[in-house]
Image (cartoon, helix red, strand yellow):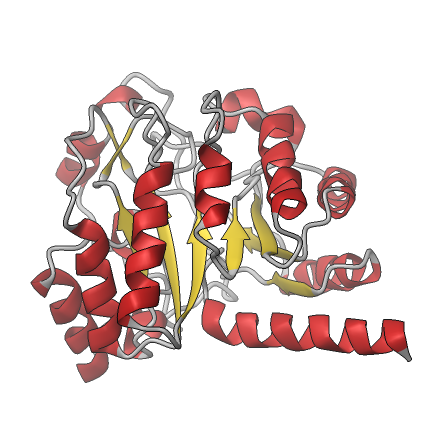
Length: 323
């Protein structure tokens, strides 16, 4: 059996998360047999890493310690994280560094576009840290990146995974005006756990963001993801599904929470693959065009393949409505 490959060290964790030093220690439980990934090391993985580093870019694959990095980078799938590697928030589940971010790199949109063109990506995901320090939360930087990608790789479809733009009026409109193919914002967990897990965010503000994105441009696919294993109930997960469908969200992802360090939120339990299969069945019955639910599902995991299925599902639904 191959288990999740951990590239981190205790010293690195302490340096990344000084704000968590006083938090209770939550021992990390042994992972079950169904949580398996291969350690990265293929030739294509090395080539992808070289392109990312050569352009001076940051990826959420590395910064968030994603367990799928070996598989995705071996297929030249990388999720670019713009606006630096330092987040203004300190969510209890997240391994991205917290602190005071630096100034925006005005050349970054073109660097991302150049890397995508070099990798020959058919679909790209662009995410970011939270930038509560910026007046627009980084919305214009997202828009510039989308426009740079369109210019450099006209055939590449673009998915953005944005912050919540909380108390940043007009920010969402700027991003949607740049015409991403997919607008993604993750709810992450159930409402009851927000103050504990995502204290800087507000559940209904995030939900409204997704709803408003669809209202601004109904042609844009909307997407959201959540984790299980933080103490939520099955009924609460189903309520999140209902809330997302009421907001006309097209695509839901559900994955197992994996604890980055003993100072992060504790794992309540590991959901079994059969439970994920059941959640996927329920979500499809509730009307989502696309569902991805498995222990290792992450918001941008195999996003290009999922986008093609999402687009095909919309065509089928439209054909069925006109038949």
